[in-house]
Length: 83
Image 1 (cartoon, rainbow, N blue to C red):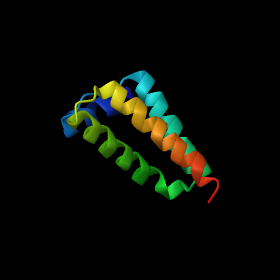
Image 2: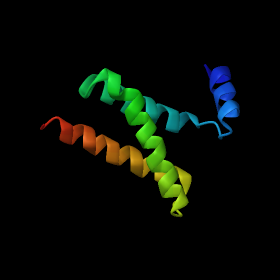
Image 3: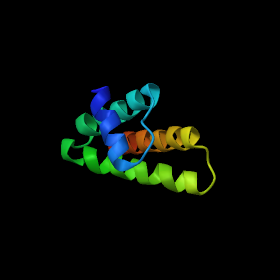
Image 4: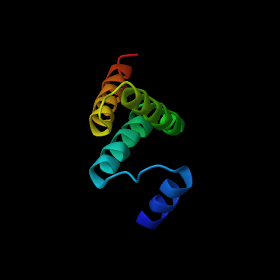
């Protein structure tokens, strides 16, 4: 799995995701898949990536941007249970 992630990171010209961030991302993806709708998982992770990049572009440090975007998505998942 790590070899493929390195290949994907290189192909996309991005830094490879660290293990802790990978676990958080997989966790929120699981929550979308099981708590919202499975087919929305790739769209939600795409939106998360866009949110992180916008926060970084606005001056936030990448790890903080990732953590806050994950937290925002987790709140949206929780709020979606009330819809």
